Structure formats: structure tokens, C-alpha cells
Length: 132
Image (cartoon, rainbow, N blue to C red; front, side, top):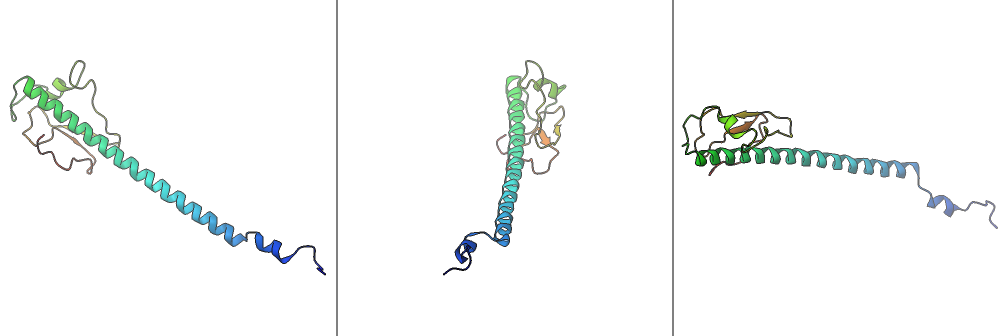
């Protein structure tokens, strides 16, 4: 005859406090990894968009040079204003999503394989500008 209404089996099915703590710790670790991954993805996305802006401005610079027969190294009065503005190649200045600021190359048509636009964030640099 069983003296206790609670059998030994009913205690074995319940989770102990240590088991619950371990499960919570594992879940917190997975959430941390998720947030780190999202942060790295956002930084990479910001970098890619910045490089895309630099490439687009470079294409506009080359298009302007071809359209108005300006050779690399020649001076262009208010060069940035010739590319960016109403009814120009860009309607407004490009913006770096990573918080960087852009520096333009001045009033001289850049030489081949030299970018006209650069970002203040050091890793927002194209790996190669050959052919630009």
C-alpha cells in the first residue's frame, strides 16, 4: 500500500530551478547572438550603400566629362554644382547612412581610377576603383 498520495514519479516530471535557469541562460545567449548579427548586418548594409553612392557620383562625374568634353585633370568651375542640383545628375547630395560625411574632390575632373567622392568613415571605401 502506498502511504503517500504523491508518488515519486510526479516529482521526476517537474523541472528543477537549475534546469529552468539553464534554459533561460541559453535563450539569452541566442538572443545576444541574434542582436550581434543584426548589428553587423546593418553596418555592412550601410557600408554597401555608401560605396554605391560613391560609385553613382563617380558615374555622374564621368558622364559630365563625356557630355561636355572635359578631360581628366581639367578644371571645372563649381564642379559639384554642375553635378548635384535641380535638373542635374543628382537632385540632392547623397547621404551616408552610417553617419559619415562626404568630401568632394573640388573643381578638377578626377583622373581615371580616382574617386571624386570620399566618405569620412574609413571602411566605407570601395575595394577597387579601377575603371572608374
